[in-house]
Amino acid sequence: MSTTVVQIAGEPDTVPLRLKLQRIERRRKLKAVTLVLPLLLFILFAFVLPIGQMMFNAVHDSTLLTLMPRTTAALRAWDGKDLPDEVAYAALAGDLSQAWEQKTMGAIGKRMNYELPGTGSEFTSSAQKARTLSAGPYKAALIEISPLWARHDVWSLLKRGSSAYTAYYLLRSVDYQYGPDSQIVASPPDNSIFRMIFLRTLGISIAVTAATLLLGFPLAYLLATLPPKTSNLLMIMVVLPFWTSLLVRTTAWVVLLQQHGVVNDVLLALHLISQPAELIYNRVGTVLAMTHIQLPFTLLPIYSVMKTIPPIHVRAARSLGAGPFYAFWKVYFPQTLPGIAAGCLLTFILCLGYYITPALVGGPNDQMISYFVAHYTNEELNWGMASALGAILLTATLLLYYVFNKLVGVDRIKLG
Image (cartoon, rainbow, N blue to C red; front, side, top):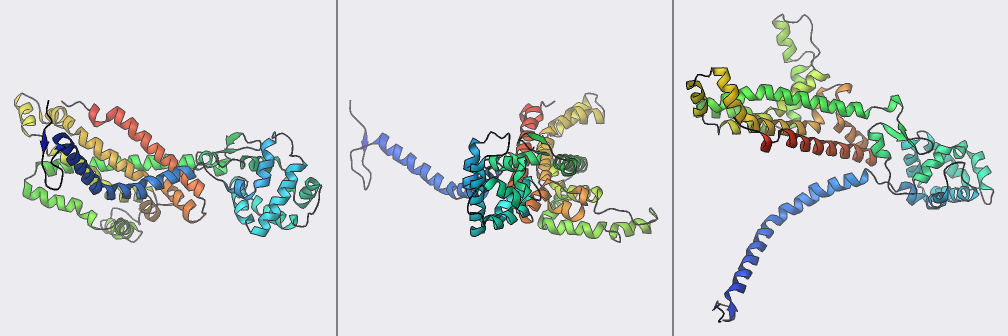
């Protein structure tokens, strides 16, 4: 049996055709990968890695482990019942002295303040005085310096710091925390705000999604049934908001809805109200502004599906005796469900992460979870809490998307 060979310029004349084809295929794949590589790198560094870092920071905090190595090492053998022994107090005295010399007591005090507010200043004072301790017994001396070191909950926190991983931030994000004996307990009522904020975020997102659907569906139907010349003009008006930034659109609503704004002036001129209505810095202004911004995101997927529905379907139903509403509801509407599902899901997910609009037109009781992520990131510099809130929001979004896709996903929608 002979082997087929070909002669190609620049290569030996004995290369089998099969090997030559394999080389061509490898070069083709290499070119494809080269074209896609910049996009993959961009997604990796601008999307995947930041999200991965956020998820990691939600459960990782090595402050106490790094800055108080003697104490955390000594506490690994502590049973957590009574106060630690003299060895742990001696290690604490050494870490306090070192923290004062290396000027790291601020970072440690800040970390302790997260879980035990008010202990940071006591830590700084103890670190300053611990430098004078040259010999034991350290337990009595440190308790005399500050009653802080006779508190069981402080030592429980230091023991939890012997691990670089902690569930504190995730627990705090759902209004739980560690108790004096490291047991998980509910946060005090004054600090239990995050579950309410998550529910508020969910409620506002649902309200905006429903409003955009009620407004967008009739408009999408109108655009899909009008002559092309008219529908194209209206479509330009629909996408016109995309030509301006989100900040400009939100600021425009501030001008319109303020106490002496355009809307109130018109209502007063028409004698519909006797005094300016409160339309801004409340839930009404928040939902109204968000609905305006999100309307195209709901409308366009519905419109794109409606354009593919043949008008002959409704005419056929009418010719068979169906009334206008019955033909629309039983024949036309089921075919629009894929567009409704896509548009509502897109709007709902985008609403979950809103920050600028509620911050500008909403009141204190209208701020969504993104506001608190920004607060912990920019003001308190508490990356653990910011990451935990972001991680919970991301997880909830993915879970809702999964449930939505399983229950009413496009692949489960039955037409007709």
